[in-house]
Amino acid sequence: MTQINLQPGQKLRLGLSNGKNMYSSQVQDISKKGTILIDTPVYSGHLVPVRIGSIIQVIYFTKQGLFAFHAKVLNRFSGKLPLLEIVPITGVERLQRRQYFRLEKLIPFTYTIGGNEEKIYKGIIQDISGGGLKCRVDNKLEVGTVINCTFNLDEEITVNGKVVRYEELLEKGYEVGICYLDIDEKTREKIISYIFEEQRKNRQKGIE
Image (cartoon, rainbow, N blue to C red; front, side, top):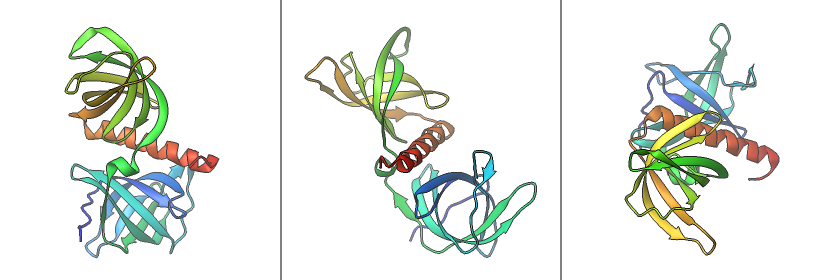
């Protein structure tokens, strides 16, 4: 069974109401007896009501991958920094990033090829994940080509990526699979958080 490898400062996603609602949080402290103090999640400027005794899903990302476990809420603390005290009730499960973090959404983006910053091309992202993206472009991009992509996910994101596959479309253009190269964890976390939020919105609208 995988151990819970959390440290203070670790970013979390909390699944409430059987995972129907996802919120951001962060680890503040871990006790010797195994309980974990985390930030009470906030949504639209208000604390999310989390009842003592409720069961929540905790998801977090490290360099070793994406992990999840279920925990019970033991206590709530108000004050300048509202906190929840939780205790794990299951072992840690490694999640498949591709399965849990792929969002189908059309997002315009621009890119340059091979470090040539002078010529800028346009394309459309078709789906995006914590590990890469699928896009549609007019240019034929051979497998192994390195491109620099810029797109907006509520804020501007810039990543380097390598073409891992391409397919010529019946209509004009190509469908291309991109794997991120040397992406820093802060940028990856922004992408993952955006995907979680969009998935939450879609669930509320009944799309998923």
